[in-house]
Image (cartoon, rainbow, N blue to C red; front, side, top):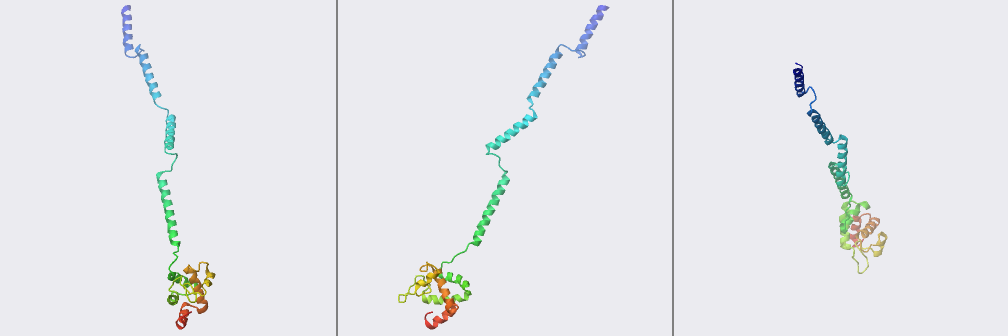
Length: 201
């Protein structure tokens, strides 16, 4: 009976061990393998702080390869547009303030009439005087008297008081001629009335 009991106990112990109620020889090896896999998985997962550091470093490297930190594309477009608008406004301002200087003697005379207090209706009288005197030619010279230029100043160098370029510049000659008409006749039409009566003014 005692032998049977021992065998039964041994057999029972084997059954109990096979059911996991006691540690079997394979269990230490299984636990060691599981722990190794866990350790390996933990080692394979990078530390979150390390990941963030690497990503920051990659971002810095990418910006450096592109030439450093740059503003967003939208900001660049806005800056370009603003510059273009500013340039456009400057062009418009220059176009508005640009003064066109006439070169034709008749146009110069028209533009100068207001400076002497005359309206545009005085131009027709002035035109008649200078057509008869010189034909509006700045180089016209009377071969008999020596009168010179559009207004036929006598002598011609009288016009030097209005500019050293009196021999070639219509504006200088007209400035002298209009001053002469104002001081002597009051207006171009007054001078033209005298001319019609005397054939000179």
